[in-house]
Image (cartoon, rainbow, N blue to C red; front, side, top):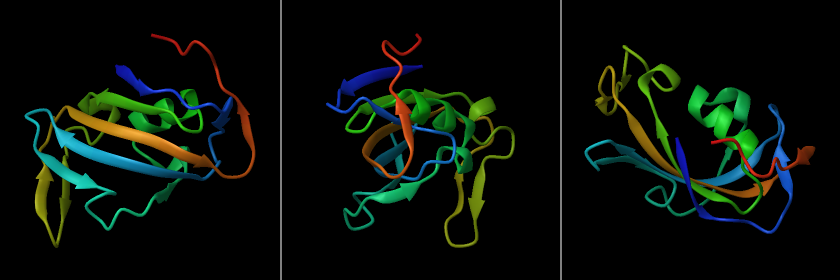
Length: 121
């Protein structure tokens, strides 16, 4: 599910393989932040919808340039029963975790498509 936080002025949405400059914050459902572009120096990050977790892949293609959404992602569309682990951080997303993201598409780079409006519920 999602909640629109801000609506951009552009009617341009990314296609599946369109790179986008984004800001994001990533939270466990208890509110613990586990990653953020702001915490990484405030620079945007380039993401391609096809290369992201399924929840982001779907949401990004419904969002437009300048949109900011709060996205609630079930485990089946995130890291599933494996969770997410790294050598540096250890287990930072536990298996079966529901995740919450604040995602802003700052710029759709390259070929986009008309933004679907209204986005589906």
